[in-house]
Length: 234
Image (cartoon, rainbow, N blue to C red; front, top):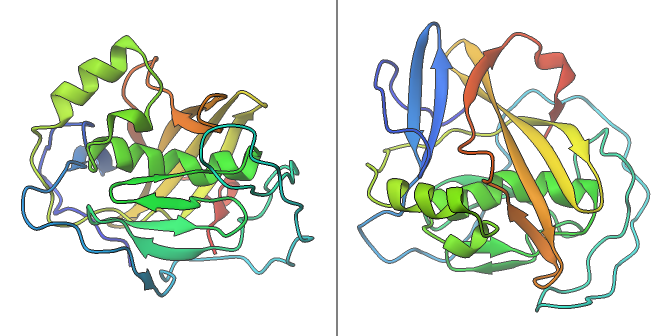
């Protein structure tokens, strides 16, 4: 079951907000740094119960060499991700359940900064929603590439209200992918509907990792009936 915010509340979008649309009401979920206890260490939890198609396992990917930064070698399998990587679900210190892949990342989970993803389309898929949560809820400025919008949104979001619950991302769709950029849509159930958002990432050669690209502004959420076009996370 998805972790959702009570319907009818309009919360400040992004800065830590995922705004979900339920019926004709825009329902936002703020992703910000909690002001309460020190974050607990990430721990593995069972995969969420979301609809998933049965797929055959893909061939074992090869490992890349770490060229810069401190990220370890990860998969070099650039196959278009028609199916989700093998994942386990871990709770980010700031509260949200996120997918984690041994082959595609995040390979480093340093407090609120979950990072180090493979330089592949699948790595981009794993990076988008995680970096978004790092930046908005975890308050990690470096999760996003440098841009004017990054600074503006960071200031707007860091004082936003903390939600009691977070959405559960159930699927994804790759809208565009290259060696340097990718655009991924993420799907989440909201009440009796589904909402989606598009997240842009770019490859940072210095960090040897993907970074959130906010140069076009904050991600927006809308509803969709075309759920079958998304790939379910395992």
